[in-house]
Image 1: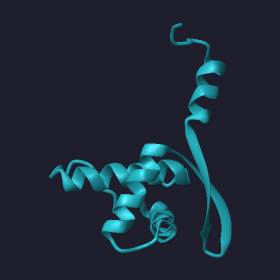
Image 2: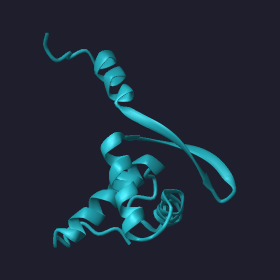
Image 3: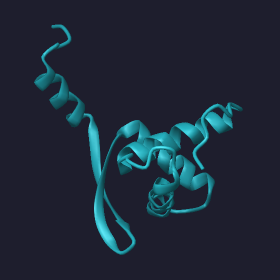
Image 4: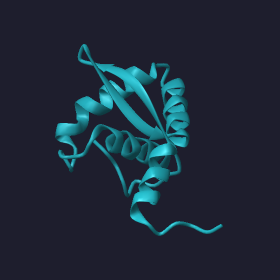
Length: 98
């Protein structure tokens, strides 16, 4: 009927909206949980760059220690990369991950 304001219900709803996929980084399997829109965007970026999604995620992972927030988790780093890529395509240089 309405939007739940109970934290446990809101958190469960958010987790259900995420898709978990396994990737291999430096020879080790790990999982990444992202919303479907971010998986779609990540695939678009990988296609544009003629590379695999796994390769793109490996590059994002390798760049994390040099990012502004080294404590950033992998899923968050992927989201930030997608955001920065689309902002760059839109002509905004206000948010750049190096």
